[in-house]
Image (cartoon, rainbow, N blue to C red; front, side):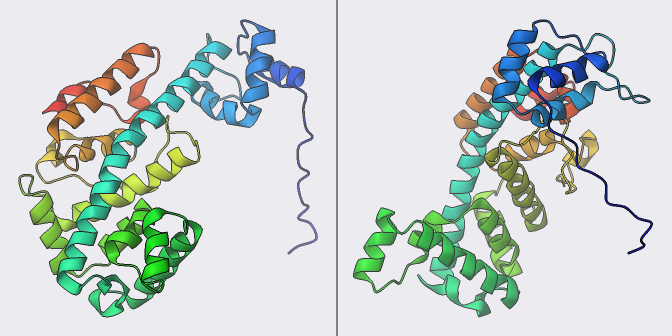
Length: 297
């Protein structure tokens, strides 16, 4: 490395009052400084500013005229509520995927067939999956199913017990590593009325994993562009939906929730949430104008 390149100094820590002044210097209106400081004591300054980025001018470091501290804070509250609501539908899909994979693999290859790399496409990815699963089993060793099989079956776990401690990331990777015939079989059996291809399922499970992990770490969904291109069915391609924001994941989830009343109830809850925060620009989450009709269709 050249001697001319000097390491940049890290910024010095700032007090709450200095943080408020930074907002003011960039032309953000602070309605109540005392309340703003109380909020910053709970929400780190740099976490809060991630939501304020949307309101910055394109050409300067200043905020768009009329941007207030409370407006940014409401976007933060909306995002937190949206994460909680989105996780409800992810939970449904994740548990269903565990069930579908364990049933298919158990009946095709036996109760411990998931440990045999020859039942999958890529041995390296399979080995990594097994190692991840073993770590999950050790971490959750006190779970009833795990403890039962450890004590009574010499630490051997049938697929339906082992998968209970898996993550959606592991299930997504496992589905992608199935033989094509097995992937097609799951698509036909569990999603027969939608003509979904296994390639679309691979993509959808991966996309949900990315968003689910952001929710688990309380990361921002609002105005977040996922580093994965969201796929749609051939029929839905004509809708012109965005391929990088949360709405795409929500839209495709309607095909992964086979219980219609549960889906309708979830969409109704989403509508109520958006109505409660009507100042939030949901187009920055990829929502089209007719978003609710598309989800109910």
